[in-house]
Structures are given as C-alpha cells and as structure tokens.
Picture 1 (tube, rainbow, N blue to C red):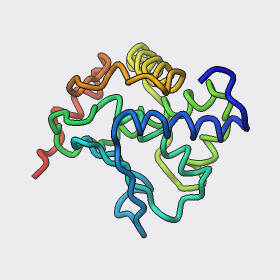
Picture 2 (tube, one colour; picture 1 turned 120 degrees about the vertical axis):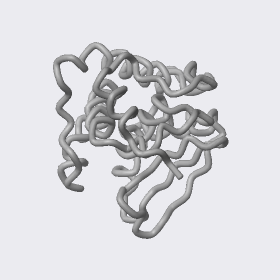
Picture 3 (tube, rainbow, N blue to C red; picture 1 turned 180 degrees about the horizontal axis):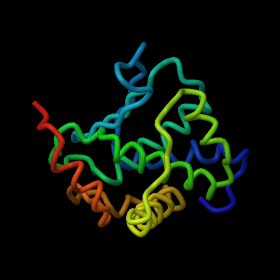
Length: 174
C-alpha cells in the first residue's frame, strides 16, 4: 500500500480494514455495547465489536485501540481471564495515540476525552515495552497486505512487567 490516497484518517481506516481481513476477523455493530465502545475478542476467527454510537471517525480510533489488543492477544490465544485490565487499557490508549500520530492523525486524544475514557500515560518502566508494541502495530499497519507477523503466537506482553502482573492477577474467564 505505497503512496495511499486520501485524508490520513481514511487511509488509516483502509489499513485497519486490510489487516482485519488478513486476520479473517468478523465485525459486528451492537446497540449499547456493554462496558465499552468497542471490543476485540481473540477467538478463532477473531471478532471486533463496535457500538453503533461511534461515528466512522471514532470507529477508526477505536479500531487502532482494538488492534493493540489484537497484537497483545492474537486470534486463538489462550485467555488470560478478563484481560481488559486498567493497565492494559492505559497502555493500549498510549500506543494507539502514538500510532495515530505516526500516520498523521492527531485527534486520538480528543476521541478518548470526548468519550471519557481512561488517560493514556505510561510509566517509565513501561516505555521500552510500549515502544516494541508500537513498532509491531506500526509495522502491521504499514504493510496491511501482509499477514501480520504476530498471528499464530500466544499472548505476548512485550516485556511490560505491569502488564504481566495485571494478566496474572486477572480473574479467569468463565
């Protein structure tokens, strides 16, 4: 996908659509999705759920955020319980915000402030791991025609200790 045409947000959505297609992901639009505006499920095949209240632009921002979760929990990976922990959400917002900036879309922060989502500040000891996670996400979105390199592996924390601890203490999914 060299020299994509269109506004940066439109290009980013097309990149996400290609990656979701390569993941063989299903998408569902739900009225008043409980507890979230969007959700990624690491089933095989994976699912992306969108609350119908999201505009097309907000769905793109949410899509980048959910793709962070997909990189952490590839389709078919073993459940770590309720992995939507505060730590993971905070890290996912930070990485999604920086990925959007990378692709010339600077409004991610406005998106999560508008929807009153959790702030995205990462801790100093999380910086190295979040850089690796960001690099994996950017690589995936820069080559959307390629099968993502992280498909087929299990959960991967990118060495982020706080994330590993949060996953270890998360209640087991039923």
